[in-house]
Image (cartoon, rainbow, N blue to C red; front, top):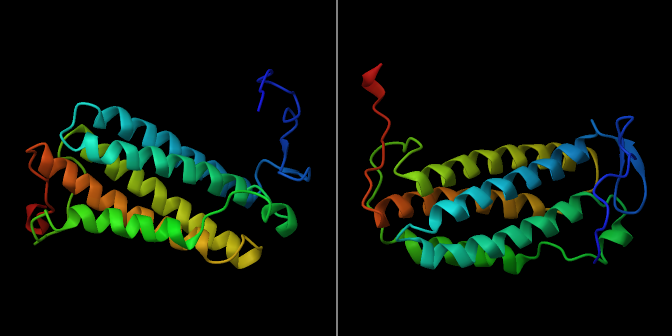
Length: 191
């Protein structure tokens, strides 16, 4: 792949091209979906930077890099309305959801049982995981809405995002635990 020009001027009037060539408004719900996947991927870039000095980094950095590639594939999938063209692209598959479940299980048993809701925090890596989790949940809501109106390639995009948001929560907790940081907990009576 060669990308030699960053600007094309093709979007100067509020439209863009989907994979396959269809021109649509930049306000199209499909763009909200794959744009939010891109935002999630950028947030995982922050997670990766925060993991470098973290005790959890050696285990989680390779997983985050894998997930970033999977998210790029998901973005391409969502940017392709034509099912025949979509079938030719790398796609989210059941094995990706299974891998997330294994990755969750590999660290979840280390964690103390929760007795309250967790507030974002617990060190930089943990806090960025919580930020990524909220972006992932928003992305999931957008994809659910799009799937109710258009074909998004089946149920796997939603299943993957649902499982990923669970993983991001657990990984954030695990980072706090590995780094010896206290997890801020919701105190319902503090207000």
